[in-house]
Picture 1 (cartoon, rainbow, N blue to C red):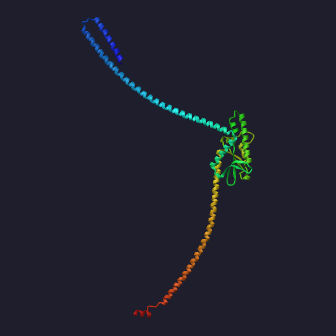
Picture 2: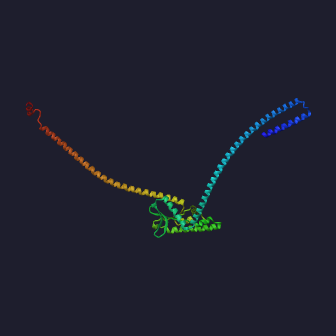
Length: 359
C-alpha cells in the first residue's frame, strides 16, 4: 500500500513539475498570482488524492480483514475435516487390522479343516470319531445305567453301543462311509459321479449287512432290529433321500428290509428323546407298583389294628357291663345300709333321750 502512495506522489510531482515548466515558458516570472492559484489547485488535488487514498486504504483493510476471517474459518473447517478424515483413516486401519486377524483365523481354520480331513482319511480314526460322537449324544439324553459302550455279545462281536429298555436292548453301531462320498462331491463328470455313487452304495450296503448279521440277536436279549448311526447329516441324506436310479433297491429300503434303521445326529436325538420318555414311564410304573405294594401292606396292618381294636372294644364293653353290674350292687348295698341305719338309731320320744335331756 505504501509503494502505491509513493508511486502516486511521484507521478503528481512530475505533473506539477511539467506544469510549472510549461507555465514558466508561456508566462513571465512576474505572473506570481497565477502561480499561487496553481499551487492552491495542486494542494486541493493533493487533499482530494489523500482522502481518496485513505478511503481506498480503509476499504482494502476491511476487505483484507473479511478475507482473513474467511480464510481462518475455512482453515478451521479444513482442520476439522482433516481431523475427521484422520479418525476415519484410523478406524479403517483398525478395521483392516481386525480383517487381517479374521483372515488369519480363517486361514488357520482352513488349515485345521485340512488337517481334520487328513485325519478322517484313515478309516480307523473315522470310526473312533463316530463312536465318540455317539457316546456323547447318549450321555446327553439317557441315564448312565440305560446304555453301554463297546458291548460284547456271546458270539464275540462287539457293538459300539446298546440301549437298555425294560427287558430288551437296542444295538447301535456307528458307520462313517466318507471316502467314496467325497469322491462323489469331487467328480469331474457324470460318468465319474455315477461310478462313485455305485461304489458308495456298495459300501453302505456292506455296513448294513454286517450290522444285520452281527448285532440283531434276539436270543441274547436284543430287539429284532438295530440302528446304524451315521455321524454326518450330508452322508445320511445320501443314504436316506437319494435314489441313484440303479436296478438294485434304494439304500434306505435295503436297510429296512434287513431290520437296520439308519439314523443321523438329528433323527437319533429325536429317537433318544422318545426312549427317554419311555424310560421315565417305566420308572413311574415301578414306583406306582411300589406304592400299590405299600398300600397292600398297610391294608394288612390296618386289618391287624382293626382286630386289636375290636378286642379292645370287647374288653371295654365287658368292663362297662361289669361296671354297671358293680354299680347296681353298690346301689343295692347302699340302700341296705341306709335301711339298717334307720332301724338301729333311737327315735325322738325314746326314754333314753328323755333322761339324758333331763340330766
